[in-house]
Length: 368
Ligand code: MRU
Image (cartoon, rainbow, N blue to C red; front, side, top):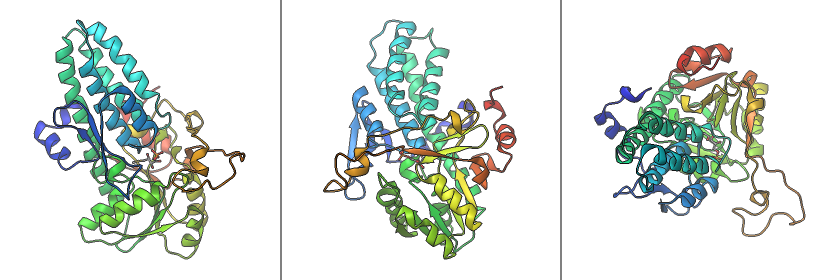
């Protein structure tokens, strides 16, 4: 999808009704739904400076790979508006500093650097123009990034739905729904689309320790969308699979390497191993903005390690372990491409060997 592929009316249409990440009325701040207080409270936050944007991403107030990218692109637009510069060059220098700061907030989801690079490319390509003109082009680009994401999620949802049957039991891990993207979501997209078409699915949502995105966000989104959802602890995935209640696993992704290895929320690879054991298809759903041809394999993907206190204390009234106890808290793991039945992108359902199918689907992105 490129700059020319969406017309202004299509952008407006695709952006209508999106609440989770948007600009405020006078375009001085990014408005997000604070994902850390859901489902108990629905609170909107206005992020108008670099620190507020960085903290919102770092603290997972806005989370999910595509939503992080969208928020960062709107965020850098807001920061670009605040830059005082009398030439394109000076403007670019300050823009780059701000982009690097935002980019350092989380390392694994490639959508963050992908979106910031797209915004930077706009500045570089228009460096001879005035800062005012560049800012106006940046505004177009961040709206386009979000509109494209909505279109990609819709296409992914269509492809994903084509693999499911009415009445199927689905297991998902973490949250890859509308809150994590723009509309529909990726892993949850086929379920929402199917619901619109009168299909019914029975979804098992892993709670997803330690930050409980499955419990707090996935079961909330599905329940609100009228989709039958049963919340399970992460260690219950095996029993629901063994009972024959799961016909497919659908998960999102934060970075897909050129060979199809896919990083997603910690615990995803365990689900994939279980699915293989029980003979259940394991699908990874994600837009092209999540594919990173710079990473040859999953070995090249940087895994974010977060504060151990998230395991012991976060979301609990009392600490769940002694403060002296050590914790290891990687936020993501990499699912080996051999465990993945298909990678579902906006350009279709890709099958192994992924090195070839990814190249074929995205020839313009390949790095030799
Ligand atoms: O740490 P998080 O909550 O940002 O992790 C999110 C995930 O792992 C999602 O599955 C992934 O970003 C895909 S969202 C469409």
